[in-house]
Length: 352
Image 1 (cartoon, rainbow, N blue to C red):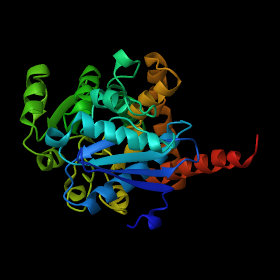
Image 2 (cartoon, rainbow, N blue to C red):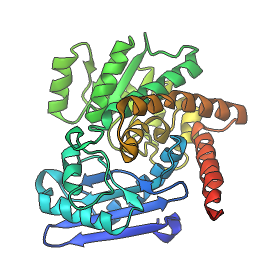
Image 3 (cartoon, one colour):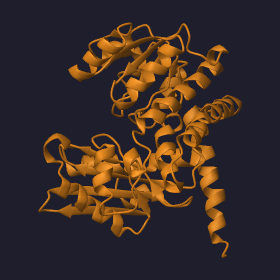
Image 4 (tube, helix red, strand yellow):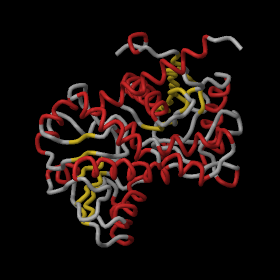
């Protein structure tokens, strides 16, 4: 998809040869307010792949922020490179200068490959940054409320499917034991669920084995998807639901933290045909953006957690609407998000 065909308001390519920075910032919409979305630091194979990812992610952020009830638009950024090798103070500060140059149209935060410490460095060059460390007045690790929100959405889906808002007695498969997957594991175990999980990182697998020895580990995502689970929670990179995985999926609910879980348009119909209840990722994983967005007005964890808890109610509303209108939940969620962006965005035409 080309930039103009994607309907984005603004796409900025950022290059600083001295630090090695190669980044793209995409602003999808500012209908509800300044755009907010994290910065992904990832070794893309090509520039085209990086562009495609940032366009998809920023669009998803617009819908996510709208459904989270935030007065914020959707944006995202990607830094093209290996965070283990290429990340440096100079590169992060150069990136901060580019964020600052947008004059507040885009607020950045953490994502895959970036952490609160990185945001503290970026903040040396821009005031339009969230997800900072607590020692700098920030919200800290946004994965805390991301996982909490996924758990709340999962509870709502369980109630819709099985009549009880709990995962107790259910077997939940988690693909990805990173920042979010670890917290989600704890919530599920405390709720009485059985957890089976996988991760490409040996360090992550060792961590869960020592911390939660009751968790069953499988070798791969393919093994997890085909195993006897009630709920599947993709919590790694996107595209987990595709033409190969959906036919072998045994779970009756999909609710996870990964962005862009559907590999292409039409996968949601494949899920519906197999009677799999798919809760849109940008609905249930919005706890993190709720957490970092709270920094803008002065961070209060209790307030942010209360707001993230409303993901349960939003998920229920979307699933009920989808059932009433006989459409996939992703279409019902899109309609609600687009309605809010249109109605609230229209108010900006009223001069004050």
